Length: 251
Image 1 (tube, rainbow, N blue to C red):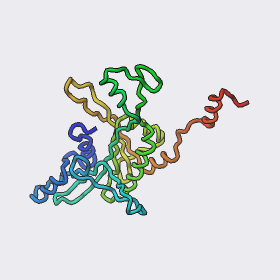
Image 2 (cartoon, one colour):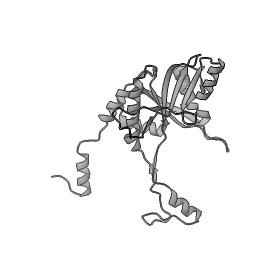
Image 3 (cartoon, rainbow, N blue to C red):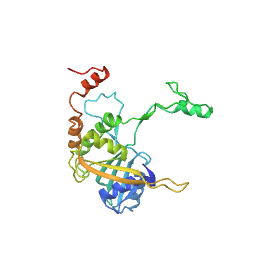
Image 4 (cartoon, rainbow, N blue to C red):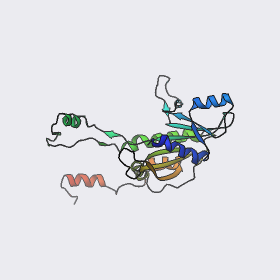
């Protein structure tokens, strides 16, 4: 997701602040300010690999002993010629978590043995997989919380950007249903940007990331869809499943 020297951040910066902007480390901006060399096109990037992360404040009422802090992956801060903040936006990036691991299979491979799984199959199959449920349990609640925090920022006029692979994006849209209204990026919005792999590259080269789609809606739309889903299964599906498992049908 970070290919092309964090191309995703450059694309979001251009869409939010203008095509003439350039990404800079906060330390480089400080040097430019001291030298009087600012152009007004600088965007300071706060986040991992860029020299400095910015934690969000803990919620009110949190115990002082609570050590957990809230971060967004990146803050993009548009600066003026004097180095003062003009406008900002936030970017979250999420791929996908996995369940289990392939340790046993790897060890069998290097021992030149056929892997035997828990069911006794040889060669066996891994029980590792993709943790799609993490989208529901962790990603969406964090986006809602951080989106609402950012809505209170007077200089965050384009909302929050969420970048992910197309497969994760599709799962999120399925979870939220198809009734979300689309908006232009503005205060209080979440813009979902999905990427997928580009064409097969020649040997020795990485495949590039290609923008697959973008959808912008409000934090409130996401919160309502998450807590009051409309894409529910038919009534009585659990009872029908129990009846089927017991091979019993209601008279």
